[in-house]
Length: 298
View: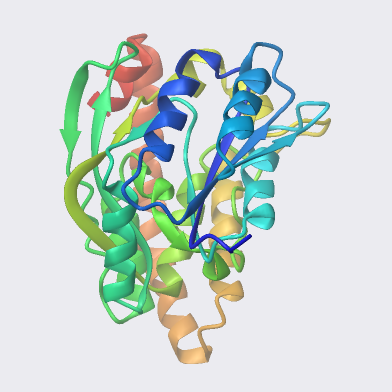
């Protein structure tokens, strides 16, 4: 066996409805030097049987199974440690990719050794696959300074689509990955921006169904339980996010002067940005619209 260049990590729990479409979009990529690693989190529907069917006919598919559901954060993170590729991409079970998505992202990373992540623009679709909105994911995370990259990320991040970008796995492994609290994907994107630039592929090659985790877990308590299992209360969300940001800055190993600049940026820019995101989430809950409408109007 040869080591694949890219690992696509697909975490799933009871994802049978969209899973075939999602897997087919990965295996149909023009970039063939990849593996698809599926992490089943103790599904009770036909998910596990379906992915084993794929593994039997395509050697690029590997399956990880768990006898009990240990939360979405755990399921996402175990994929990173089990991946073989030097490049890694998370892929949700209800999303899909156009055929050239991985090829174009790999080319963008090859062209810019200082980039740690490459992502495309995003096309949002509804449950039936009908287009809802095209979104230009252009964060301008391309400055030489970590403080400027962090500022750009905090100020312009909206739907967290870039967490599904192709990332250098050695860099990803130096982060906290997906922490066990709601919104930890935001914290991860902030942390990645400290390590390098984000390369943008200006094409709508990522097809995303937003809001399914919200639909399945309509209360904050339910969403917290989806992220993690086990007893114990989390601190208030703002505390979780502030702590994760400060820990990421310390972990990045930037040197005293640059770390001071980043800390000053975080302390100035993050509090109002977090407050704005919290207000948008409250308005979306109060509107009681569909998850897709709530997300895309935020």
